Amino acid sequence: MKDKEIKKFVKEEIETLCSLLEVECERSFEMEEGDNDEVTYIKIYFEGEDLGYMIGNHGRHLDSLQYILQLMVGKIIDQDPQYRVLVDVGGYRKEKDSKIEDLALQKADDVRILGEEIEMEPMSPADRRVVHTTLSQYEDITTESIGEGVDRRVVIKPAK
Image (cartoon, rainbow, N blue to C red):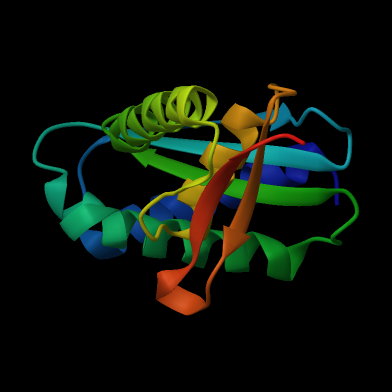
């Protein structure tokens, strides 16, 4: 399936979803190649007033919406190249990711100063990915995910 067909499908599904949810807001999306050519990101943005219910408590509705759209896109396309759906409502995810990046950099500085590993609080897979990606550019720091299920968290360590 070509990008043009995928764009059309995503646009139709977003319109259907918004009408079912009775959501009145600005909707836009873009497709962006990842750092490696294996992944294409479909970024969907919702802007408007009173969209807090689309975000939900601690972003749970937003994560569910993203998951549903990811499943829908995955059903209609071949997984080569792989498409990843990213949804943001009112800039919530962008702001959250920025806070996680800042926290990861702060913890990395603590690891450098103390010379010992630091465990972060348990996080969702998407939040852990932000930490790993943010700190991957530093040669003196390594990251690793440990734990199971909802207790899975990132450990930041000095590189050996």
